[in-house]
Image 1 (cartoon, rainbow, N blue to C red):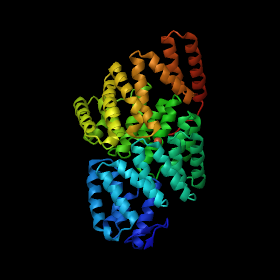
Image 2: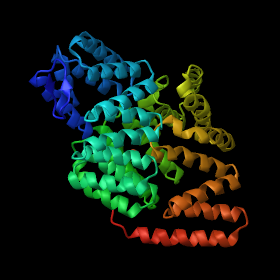
Image 3: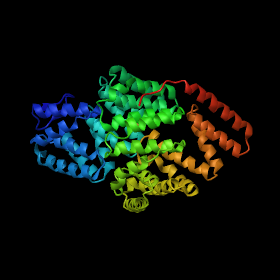
Image 4: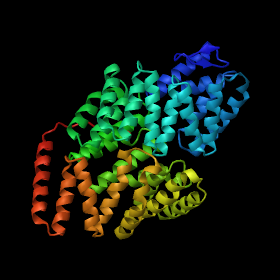
Length: 465
Ligand SMILES: [Fe+2]
């Protein structure tokens, strides 16, 4: 049986099939954009099931109805080639079928088994990590990363994948060391850049964050739209916290929104950035309407709750009332039909959070605070990263402050301050709350610290949008 570049046996494969699979592995792990070349190879293939299976996974990772149709077609083709398939390829087929059926708990389980049995299969780990990510399962994300790394220590992608799992498990020092190791091995590793950005973000190391991402941004030109817009999104987050919302807005216009407006990942990067800018008082003009025009067709998507909540917020901020009403009803139906493993995500978190976000978007802050407060204890289950989910926490705090729930808001901001003590806006928020609560001395101290930090940050060089 032929073997790929990782030494894995591939059933039914000739030299061209192996070449296509090796190409896909490198392209996927490097977040490249030459996937159409692989799809063409998968279309030509007649014996090796792994090619159409991989094409199905690529299509499903689009998080779209069209992607599901294409994915279904490729999986059917793969099944016609199953007679030459090895146990590993049959596992790929089973995991893909489970994904198509909405059984992502089963997909994750199969991918974890694959990584245990064939730890050189880096894409089995990559997809397993995607399923873990979409369920907010940080432990599984790390388990997969560790198993891959143990068998691929010469591979910088494995270091980056393990780094991200460590970061999501809050093991920040180890995560940073792993990400830096990956970058030392290969400067052009956007996922390792990304893992390091998360580490710096988690500790509020803003100046380092901007300097680091700015120093490697030249390597993202060949990245696909998700990785390109997402790494620029991370840079914009640092700029917002550095009190430079205008620079972040320029990144929105120049880098984050506009690469592939139809793609879910581009859309949520844009939505999340615009929402954060508004929370800092920026007038974002007609930008919500533009985004909403692209997410209007997603009212009944429900692939990942984390995505749906952001689509809903964009529609609500754009004033698309009937679309919001329709999507809220659809989300309730989705929650009612949820399988046991996903009930907490859809019913306990997504439904109250969606209503809370809709309330916040139209200025009903007391209702938003109440509903988002219900959802918050379950937030991790909706998927996404810690940094991405923090948007919902920020909207919740905004609603608490605006509706006068000062004690509750204070507790959250104090916790934020302990974790990330370098953010002027957090200190200003604390100062306002201390003042409202009659704690004048603490208010003055927080204001003073905010001003000191802001002065420091004013001298940092800009990042070209
Ligand atoms: Fe990220």
